[in-house]
Length: 313
Ligand code: SER
Image 1 (tube, rainbow, N blue to C red):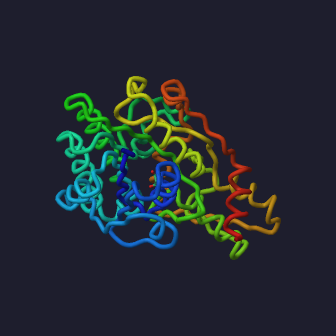
Image 2: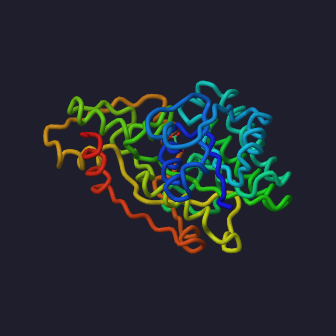
Image 3: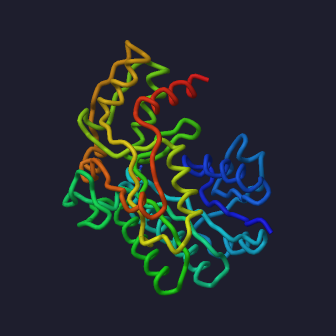
């Protein structure tokens, strides 16, 4: 039998694209999309969809049993900027949803789990450049604390109960199909929309804020490669560092200027600056490269061309 897959948070920035790629790979009927509210377009039309709250264990268990689900991708989360405003809601969503899925794994109701972590697990005392896999972490944001705790629990369930949980520390993700919401790296998506609509963008981070970033196609490919990897090759059961490019708002602006010469950027840093300042500038992802052959393919110029071309349509 084909494997059947459940995606929680399927209508979000990553979930939308991940669902469509998984449906292409495994078949529309065996990839069940779910979210707390309905999405739109191809995601809703191409295969099964369930309204599902990721914090409701019984509801998830019902769907898992009904569709005989084997793999779960838990993409529902509250991101860094929103989490600073609603710390307890962020903690409850980010942690309870993870425990629900880990416990399904522990009880052998599902075989394999993907759970996203983030560069936000690192903090102001972490080495900023080429941040290693294993290093001082001390996250200083609500979101980062929830992701670091989540990583510890993933490793614990893997070691203690043999749960096959796999995870990536995503950098900021740049994509055109679905907008992100409530993150600190969201500027790197907004900037392209504003460049096309208004030829101007007022950035909420300062011009020299260098952060690790990645194009969505690379992120989806990394996710699926990790899930396809031979379990015996995986030496990290907390979460893998994952890198592609590192850039500043001013570098993205420059790359846009080669397509839209009169594009102008201005800077008005807000509370998100402090979040960004606590995160690494670049990531050492050598363990992902060694263990399961990770290699990014999109550089900044290619990302800019793809973003502008697709958003124009
Ligand atoms: N992109 C996320 C955020 O900005 C970090 O994982 O919150």
